[in-house]
Image (cartoon, one colour):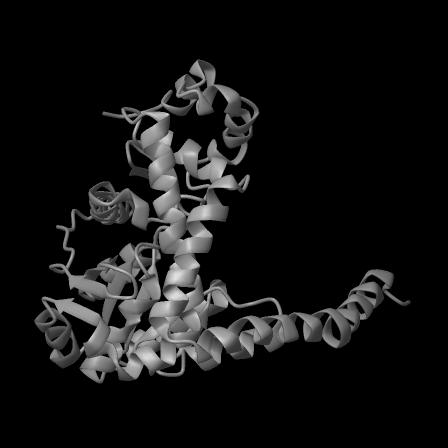
Length: 338
């Protein structure tokens, strides 16, 4: 008997493969090629201008405003709006700088200041696997340049593009960094474990919104957090170095390598995982507090962000007058832990 759902799925896939996906590929090429042909400083400046002037007016910016109000309840609407403007400046610069990734791999010393790089060299030479973890902060793609400077392959976890043709473009721009690109998911985690057993070195972002995971503290609220980092460290004793990426000015960057994150094992594996991830979250929180505009606030990072930003948007007239809607504000900080 013919499974109609499978037939419809195959037909839909064929339509995407031969119509929508090629059109998206053309659009991606039209976008990327001019950016790659222009000097990096021009591209970054154009992206920053677009971000500052268009981004704050998009509806998704109300997600950022709600998140900022939740994380920084002491800040006024005007202060939060200023952070949103600067966030879009950084975000759009990061986006349009992407086609220059391979160029940056061969010119990293002209653009990137590496701080405490000896910690990378120690991990490279210790004869076992190691982990570098970071957040969507600054131009987070720049952090992977540590691989080029150290001559050490760096395996990276990433979200695979739905369009296989566009995926090829993404992989092309990442070719300057040696190592395996591992798609997110259960199969990807198994591949990571295998690579680590062969003394591989892994880079991962740990600040994404998760549908699954453990509940851990972040800015005084519980958020779903991936336990993968803690699981690998606690089970295999891999060193884990926090890596902070900062945008200095325009298309110039600083990458700082902090001391390996350690935690004493108590014998209660689940509690140890939670304590480790809360320490990791606290490191990222400290980075963000120091320069809030460099983090990606449009993530629906907290559970209530998914709906409450809509309530804030509905009362935007009050916000634009410099008034926080009291009902939304109280809902935002309801479960705050000091």
